[in-house]
Length: 439
Image (cartoon, rainbow, N blue to C red; front, side, top):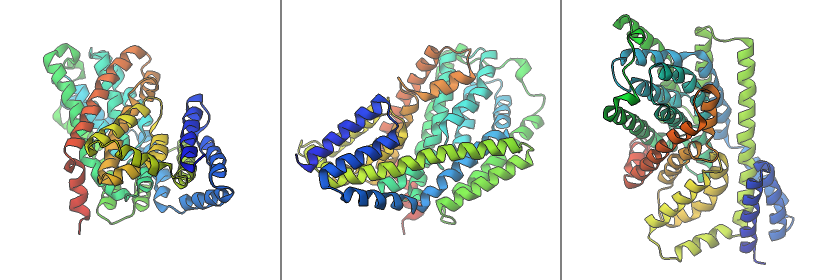
């Protein structure tokens, strides 16, 4: 059997292992060793050592635990609740005001942390009961909460973009800059959809009752400033220092982690238990991601050495399809993979397989990375897995899971519309990196 054919069987074995439910990291390592030994002998063991040490020397990945720690602490500091309350008070007489408040807070929180589960949970805790009291439509409410939570994997500093950068060979700073406008565009699309629905049918998002109105404008302004200014300054210090070249991604993440710790102290939320839980959760999430990065790096190296990616590239190019049609086909494959899988295996396993095709067709790799990031938002909203549904159901048990699913599907189609928008207008992603980093 040729090495290329061995690589095909390697992918079949991987998909089988994933769908059966074996731990992905161990599956990657075992399959890499078995098929690598089959394809090119004991060289596979030297390759494994080399690839694992290469990942350990990747300085950019050191920012992963720092960004995770930053997000976990900000979640506990209570700033987002205050910001939500201020927007709610300011727009109390507007139909769909809670939808606007949820998306505004989701965008700010996404810029402070890339943890989708934490964002959906916190938004659900803040908004679900208020929406019920005000008679808001459950499906539209569930949809905008879960969709807003997914912005955390797109709007920088996103942990997914940090992991994706070394995988596709693009500086993380370029990905951060490229993701800003697509991320904000998605937030605008979600908000506009909800507001238009409320305009056409005011019963979906009634104006808030008099008991929910503010006593004075001074109260609104005070709550808004206290809720917005601290996280905004923190994001500007962390993300701004990275984008403008004052700090590396790891240094910027350290600024963010230190600032979130300071804010937690200032708001008197820091306790020994909170700090212990945050550090432990950071350790769990970081170990999961980084071990998967190392395992997938080894798996990808074996797969590439077998020559299968090049064979697949040549076969696809031999179909004589237009480059844009091939790109649409790749996006469709990622969209379907996102139904049963999370972003981690897709970014770490399948992107390296697609990368040779993308380069051969002459597409900008940074743009391709952002297309993938927008596409992978659907992984959190598409059944049958759709983890966002379970996060929201956990904090809003009064909502039926079927209603949550129906609400999420609406926004999943909006995400696909956003993907088409970035595909049609590449400068939406490429303009800012070009301005910041073109010499």
